[in-house]
Length: 105
Length: 105
Image 1: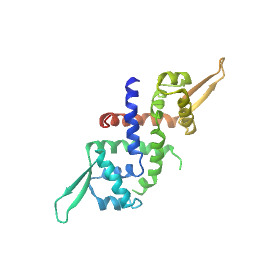
Image 2: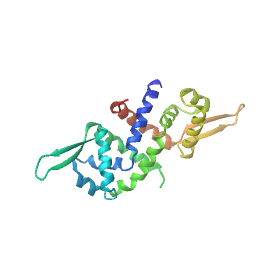
Image 3: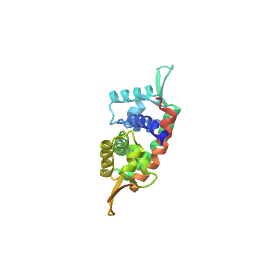
Image 4: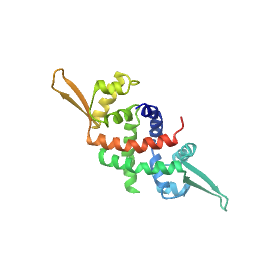
């Protein structure tokens, strides 16, 4: 119990992070491999470019997404999940299943 | 992808619910079996009775906790996880592990 209580703020921070609108879906899309900004944008058409930019920046700041500039012509920017991000992506599965089974529209 | 997009609001609702301060810990405590209010209160001393009352009421409204009045003398009230609650408790484990590994204090 003691240990659980100390963990509680960390668990709450996690939920705060992954509970943000669209964050789960961006991670889900990146689970299939690195994506360029335009590919992320196409994969989630309901999400505006402005908000997508904001969300990937947050995920980068949290060490979940790595932004890589590929020095080709034209210059490309790729987004990849870090190890932290991949492990988060793996637990999104069971959460999504629970939500699908139990949360009413 | 289409399916994922429709699921997204449900996943966000889930996070909203379980991301609330103390909710995860209350569910965790109830995973070990039904508890009386006083037992919950003792298990999480840092949580005030007022806030505990509020949280268990929310969990009851969401169908996660079942409140049972046991007609003995003195009358006892017991809180039990529903099936929905138990399944939620099971996914709290991996989330907690991820948080423990990756979230900095």
